[in-house]
Image (cartoon, rainbow, N blue to C red; front, side, top):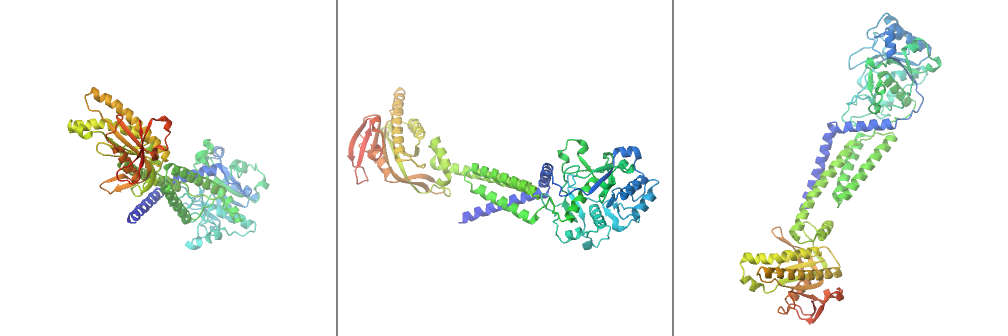
Length: 618
């Protein structure tokens, strides 16, 4: 129990460390960068469909306009543009150009007309400290500050700030909010979008929403959905000045006047930028971004929902931790690494599909952090499991030595989880065949040799015998001085028919090997090595015996004793160099027509009251 508690404590600490490490990756922004790329690719591949016709138009200062009218453009031209748009019954007109200082001979006209016309909006910038047109009405001013992500991509729409909460003056309204507000008033509609955000009716971005990590979430921010390209029309300054447009088209439209020429540097990267090959299309002007934002805000004002939303960050974090722990538990419980790997592939695939389907349904959820976490947890768990398997393998080698055939060793390894319990082989009853051997006249041979010569002489034979036993699926359990005890059918279970036939086949091969050894010994003037073998089949108890200092795989039971007694039965009776005595319990499974067999009849063996049928394989 104490060991289990310690192991559980270690595993818990391990998982906590993994979660901590992944959290550090997240805080460092590693996962955020990956999630932003995934977000961009999804939005590029699956752009959001427009829920309504665009209510915005962009009037841009193009490169051609700069060539014709110069830069900075004289306010007289802007004045004429605004006047023409006003005459076309536009609902709101944003001058997305800084005019805290007038430009050219038309400065006064532009300033006076803009102040008096209730459709015109003048911009200012909080971060850079740039003011609007001097003495411009506060209720028609708007800030053009917009959040930029760490990779310099515009994804978020800063709709506004809670003016009541921070007691801010009326000019602290974003460009799109002011555009929609004036547009709605002109149409005698109530504008309450700020209240919807203040009251939490529209979900806003938090510090850890979606794939963001500790992002600046001040104010009311939502994700810009960026519908298909050319969603709203674009006109040049020249076309408006020349009245080369339809008045009916501009009627009740929100207009943004701004710089669209790349040379003016008022261009920004947007989610699809990295996937566009044409350098002319890689960036979008600030005016176009404001137009997108205004359309999105008007859609919300008209009762539509956000096309790209996020779930509660706390809930998302809880689900990620739950996924990590569930994956870790699954990998930990998987008996085979292959099963764990297949499970991990299924989990990653399922998460990928979930992220995709969520985005299609309008929700951006975090992907990189859970993926990195579960891969990391799985990898470390597999490393741990591999280390444990090495320990188990070492234990098996300690218990079984190097006397197991490759086939048996492989089978043992497949069954290791069921065989090994708490570092030991559990006691198991198995049907086996025991092969017991002893060297004939060992005492007399040992008198004629030095210890070194005797050991070399004995090992010369034992090396060959062990190899034959292993090759035929048996295992040498122990050496008994000048003999050995081998078992067939343990620790990997086999039928008695399989084990008895394998043991007798092995005994015949050992006999053939002895004949070859004797020929070699005669040449070297060494005594011949001769064996007696006893074979018996039956049930025994197998398992680990001993403790930490010494442990061995024990074979316990009557069948072991019978095989040993058969080996020593009538020692003097030797018909060849390797006598093989087999009990009737083993022989009954044998295909007898393949062997020359002599029946010794029922014999009394030491330590056993019942008689044993004994046969010799000649």
